[in-house]
Image (cartoon, rainbow, N blue to C red):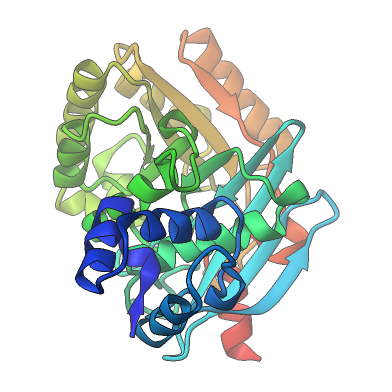
Length: 343
């Protein structure tokens, strides 16, 4: 059987024609799934009964099962989804005022072994298919306040640029008016710094947001924190990001996790200011690190984080300091999966 969510609308219309069904039936099914949230062919009442039976025998709509759902005191909700092959992925719902953001995973595990992230502690298992990524978003939407998502960030488990084709195929359905209709400017792709992926994204012609995990302003420190830096060092990465912003006219956000005693000193702030001072279409998003016992990391305290931010502001660097969300429910990437595997 095939996952029907692997098809965009045009592909599904062709598939229906090959079944001697009408193209408009494909449009009806697309609407049932993405507009009305109905994932059982039996309840698609305007589809002929015989066709419904045929579809149920050829396609499936759900592959994941909701294994666990946790809600934080701040409203953040984390879902753990499981596949029949034993794969587990995480998604997070983050409501803030009028904005509800879904944080989406792109892989089962991660192969890039960043020293501050729990996603890779159980190793890399596989890529998520486009239909599975879309299904994650459907689960997040169904569990969000008022069944509503306004924004998506590909900042969950895995590296989106390492699963580029599936991520982009999913985004096209998520973004399309016939699909989930989430605007491109409300979708962010995060990367640890895969230069060919950034270059490829710049040619997509979509107004997607790009976020780059930086976390250090020198090659020596970044290579310790993020082994990918040995392949794509800072000079090349920043150059590629500048070219991306010039080509797309989009701002690039650099994520910087503040780890106490590692990268949170005023010297680190000065190095960061020097690195990005002449990068006009950029922003730094400071994030206190999570408490992850397995990694023995501690976040910078409030005073240290405030001083770090203040120094960047004095250097006229565009910077924000993000408040951590969902810490009481292990909302950082990979934590819930790790805890579930231990239980």
